[in-house]
Length: 330
Image 1 (cartoon, rainbow, N blue to C red):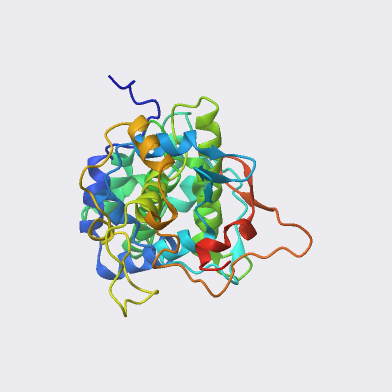
Image 2: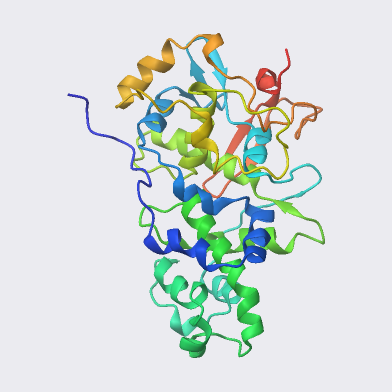
């Protein structure tokens, strides 16, 4: 019998997260998607955790890469940006400075007195009742630091984005929303010195750090396991090429993910995934993903091949030159 699953994954998400998307208007969803991508559609991506656990055992933290037999692959900035349909080139770099209750309450427009506890986080249901439900403003008006319903309507998509990011991109083991990501989301939504910011490199850094920490014994993947799962399935279990003519920009690659990968006879444990990956031939790997911009490198370094990526959990080195094959180059 295979050993129990070692890495705790977000197998389920709070019910409120699954419902929230259906309570927003089309314009509100588009507003959030322009900064975070179609993040609400992650609710339909199932990850059993075993693939992620296998990848962790193949992780090389020195090269920030997975060693698949004699091959190297890594999630690249271009791949993550393409999957989420987010701009990267020309955007400002976010420095993920941790924030606390004061910053969170200012961002959400809540009175500090109604945010109880000292664990630097808040339950999803608390925010769902006040910002997702149509009667949230009228029912909980005393909890807000503002008095205008117009202000509340402006806050709704911001808080939705904060919740989705806290669940799917920067998760906590208790499935609460950490106050520490408030400054990061504020920079994302409002820009930095009049420049649009991007969250892509921060998400990628946390994936790298989570792989390293789990390899060293951590039991929870403090990074976007769903992005890593999609990335791996698209590279290693790809069924058919995408239809010709699909746009690189504007197409929802997350909601259509299940149509592109072979879900039959999937490995049923981490050891089975390891056996599958270790014998995978070059011909069985889809090196270039459909949404990858192969013509423009996002990051280039003149004096060094190593580029530091700043995440909420730490800093990791990124070596884009090593993965030119994933950009369709030699």
